Length: 637
Figure 1: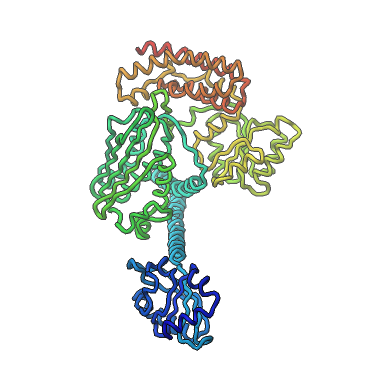
Figure 2: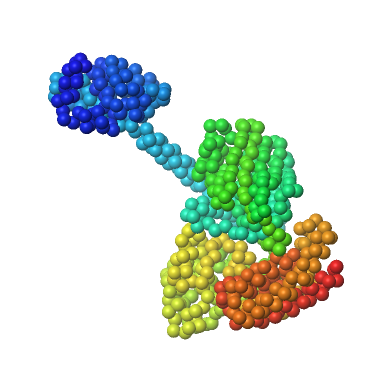
């Protein structure tokens, strides 16, 4: 077929100009030997070849060489058919790249007696990329599930084994060793589960960031303390430096900063076997309101391969599967780090060389604060027996014996009267016969779950029992579960495993606050109500700083208390709560432990406008304690 007869053939169809010349599809007419007899203008738009520039060229010369043999086989099959479809191939573009195309063919031999094929081609490059990405993601998730199976089973097996050994030994030393092993295994499980839950919350857009005062040096020192033993055991150095230009007090979310640092430093310790890890904190830039803080975590570890570094922040991935087998981990840590940094309007990057080391650099803008903004970082190991809910009647509804034993032990140390129920039905029967101040309710239980039990309780004829505070204690910690609890009438929500301090706070929000006021009147057997050891540790014993803080407390606290009394008298509970919150850091700095829980109770009660009838008594008690503290502090200076 020559060019003229081809043109005559094309002109026969009314579809020619509309479909072939002006259509978006790429059209080739190719004879049985692969010679290109015609192509439409869309070839230039998609592949870059000028109009008619490929005529008389051979189609096979533009097929990716590694796929040519298979393509010729498919092409020959198309010659033997009147129609063919969905034949994929890769065609050479003008710029030297190859694009994925797919053709449907019409064999002209069968209708026109012409030995040629019309190839109606579509660009499927994006579709192929999407398919490859989907396959990569599927493989990553399959690898992640395999990792999870291994990571979860390992500590569970450890716990099971240690429990068996614990039951067989009478040696106190061995008991202590086995209990430590069990504790370490449970901590590993919590890390894995928290990684999954954190990612779920972040991706749902429901993560709320705090804006409180903190000191970077305090935070970083505390984080490094958790790695000192491991780094020492491995024989690697672990040190940090903080520029003097960094503001002493910043406003932000210190818990999320902790999480970022723990992940990055933990990785550095894990992957470093020789050398050292250095954390540098410096001021990148600042203005009147904000300081842009730059954090660098440098190690001399195994490094990250150049072809893997671009995916190091992807979910469910590590450098490769062998890394997981050798070092463990969920592959979620760096994904969470990146998202936490970006949620705080920050940026993060990584530089690495194999067998040389890795540096993670992240920058977060923090608002500048003052010493009055500082919030005390509670000691997670402090003695829970210092709390008291004397004679508080608690109904604990929990079907798991171990969980019930744990919660009961905590509550009894707080001098509560505890009665237990193994399901919702038993809880209802006990509530009908006895009076309780609060119910701690599990959600998933046999016979009757916590949701159904709460619905029934809220319909009691007795208004006092119908209105009893109900706190959900549940292992369901996925987004949306707390809304389910509130929807059925529960007052609050605490996910398991919980720390005793968290339980104390949530109970404090919903019980009669006179119990805390009574507690404050019978506080401490010590002669002094203040303790300046924490303040001294914060400033490294700087006596001028200590004096300034004491004078600030003596000057500012009485007016705040006076204002609190006015707010209570005028039922301005929200403003009262804010004043109590403002007072908390000062109470902490002077070590006024006897007032901390009282201030906290006032803040919570004001914030929720709950149990406000006792507010005046609590503020009076607080004023009495502060008065004694001021006299002591005057003696100090």
